[in-house]
Image (cartoon, rainbow over all chains, first blue to last red; front, top):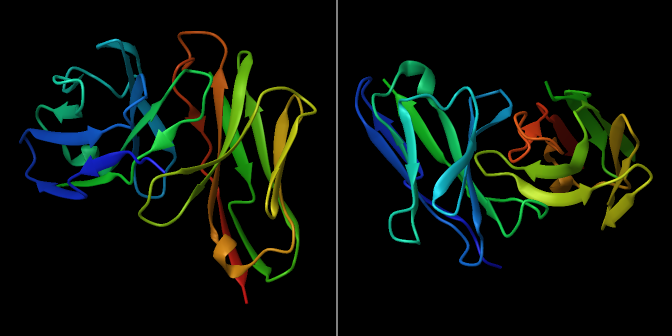
Length: 113
Length: 114
């Protein structure tokens, strides 16, 4: 079965540094998402992306965050200047349509020191 | 604001002991209710989508049901490999409140003892 692939699986960075989390969605998916899960907390919606632009974003997704899909394959989440509270597991997800099930990747564990 | 509350937070069962997990939700028009399984350190794995009250879906030892206010995930004769965190999520029908994204509950951590 096709999978959503995320790299790296773990990322450690210093506060204030920029990080880029990468995802390769399933090839026939059209809608792409980033979610995060702080340890012991809920999975939280960050942003949705369709037709090469953001379609919706949560309050968490402030100016420090950005997403892009530069080559029609990779889907990236950039955090411009990381904060301690950005430490979380970040999940990439995708689906064929907004009525279909969402497929999640295995996540990138981001640790900000 | 859309809300999802799952209970219990944790549940420990003996192998073969059937039980139910609850998901109560408040949403501005339900577009879909989703159940996912999450293993430690992994992403959520899709189980079911329910769209309207009265709908039921089954997969192996799991059965999901939906009413206008809550959903249940029934686990029949569970095995140790069913141990995981089970997540409930809703998708709203209207924009501006997460119509595109899912709103998740905190999950029920299920442990099945042999």
